[in-house]
Image 1 (tube, rainbow, N blue to C red):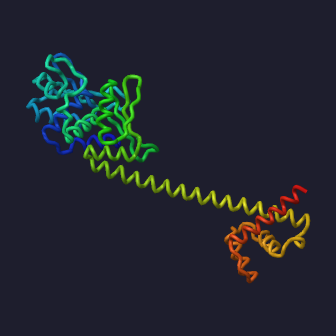
Image 2 (cartoon, rainbow, N blue to C red):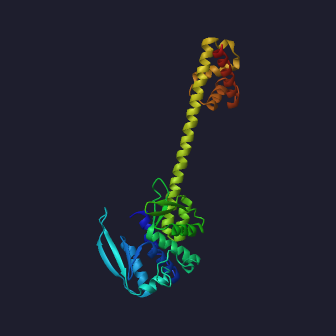
Image 3 (cartoon, rainbow, N blue to C red):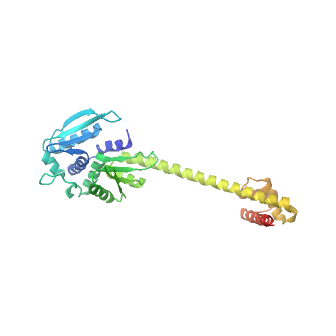
Length: 309
């Protein structure tokens, strides 16, 4: 089962009061139902969701929707579940704020559907249940989206999300509009709003693992870059020293520079820190990394002057 389906499955188990169930049902039917002159048709390929919606309708309105099970006409070749509601048709649509007093479909729900904080969160659960999807955090990118059929309604969903500082974005697609969130922290916050805490723990665990892995990779890359930089620097120092040796000889330079040159040639792959310790030990003198670096700069100046000559 995909991560999206796990989240949706968990939504069906969230405890809600009556008004929250009405808000969720309003969002779900608004986004995943065909409303005709005398019926409401709800289609889903998820049996768990179909049972959940069936039970909500039965509990809230004391009706028993007609269920038709049929084969899906898609690549998955699974089953789809069609719920048909004819009883209390007008009452349900009016109560869910889907029609006005004249019986015409309305695009936006009345404020009482989402005015309370708990109802607003329930409404977002219904929207996600109907049209939301979320990438598994194990994948290469974080992505949460809702596919919405109407621009104004998509803006409305953005406003609901941004009431919780979720930084949602809106983009037009061929057959509608996509509201999406890409920031991992914001997606985690959204899951918390839905009250799907098992999914939150899973998401956070994977996110923490990925962040730790990325940190280790960055540190390894940084260490590798430093090693390569040190090796290249040492090779350049050796080339300068060989130029001095082959051109004017070591006897023509200062004794301290001569010692540094001889030991750099002898220990070509040693870092300056390691080389300073070797010289200090073998020559019974004290030279720091900074002091050795200063000598290498002097040798470079001599080599540069020889090149120019």
